Structures are given as C-alpha cells and as structure tokens.
Image (tube, rainbow, N blue to C red; front, side, top):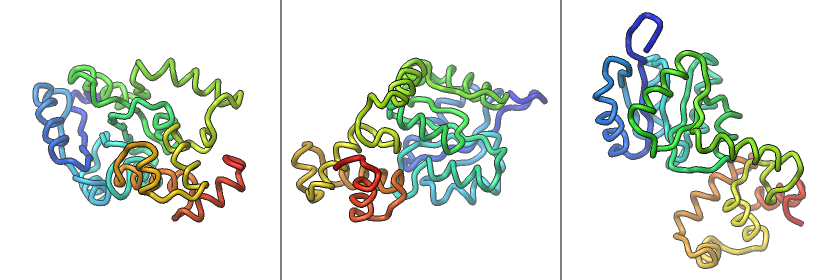
Length: 221
C-alpha cells in the first residue's frame, strides 16, 4: 500500500494472456492493497500501456517471445529511472536474477509464489526495497562468490546460463539448430529461444557474431 493508503498500482506484462488473467484473479482478494490498472500481452505493446498508465510497479515475465522482459526493463528504466519493475518468472536460475538486477529491476520473484507473499513483496518494492525470492537469495550469494573465483561454466561472466553455454559450444562447433536439438533432446523452437537469449547477452545479432565473440572473449577456444 502507498503512503497515502491507496493500493499499489501495477501493470501486468506477459506473453500469455492466460497467465495475466490468472494473476488478476489471484490478486482480486487484495484489491485494497494492490490494484491492477493495466496489462499488456508481450513486451512490444507494454511501453505504450505503461507510458499511458504510469503505474507504481510493472510486473513482467523474464522471457517472452520477441523482446524479453529484461529488454523491457532496460528500456523502461532508460525512459524513466524511477520506474519500478519486478520480474516474475518460472526460471529458478541465479543468472536470470543477476541479469534482472543489472538492467535495473527492483525484484525477481518466482511464479510459484503465493498470492499473499506476492502482495507483500510488491509493497516492499513500492517502499524502496528490493524483492528477491528467498530460496534464490542464498544461492545467488554463493554463485557470485564462485564467479569471482572463476569457478563456473564458460560464459557465466557474460551472463549465460549453463544450458546457454552448452548450446553456444555446439554453435561454435558448427552444429545446426536441428543438430543441437537432437543432441540435447529438446525442440527446435527451444533452441531458437536460447539462441535469441545468447545473442542478446553477447550483444550480437546472429550465429557468426556469437561464434566470433565466443572465440574473441575466450569463452571457447
């Protein structure tokens, strides 16, 4: 709740309308503390919605089709450094947490969170605190320490997750998307989604750029 006693105003952003509707239903019981003032399906539509509504907090997914929640957070913070953004994700991965904090997010919570805890964390963020899923916090400290000691997988310093590092190694070795999918027993679209994330983190736009950066930065030799 805000200092004036009015509810915290939030905008929901996810690329699945069903998730948005589920969150709205979940928060209905807390209407005196949190008010959903708007929603956007996908990051591309979110900028205009948020500009019009000026919410206290934007609650968005980390990974979406096209532009990601991380991209959205960075763009929102560049436009308005005071805008608070909280990531709500299924990914229990410290690297996503680190990336979210690097682009200016005020929190990283998991979609398994209970409704009353979500409301409590949103109020914390509105009052100037940073909300991090309690189960991830201790692991994040350990991960940060290991990164400092270089005790991690190739590409961790560039923000790559362990699976993204694995996929990048196959790209460097010349495997096609189908070849990578067969190796890892995952779908072609999953490979493409990972590659988009890899390109974004490495600051490149295609496979050739990713390979060049991986070799230049010594991620793989």
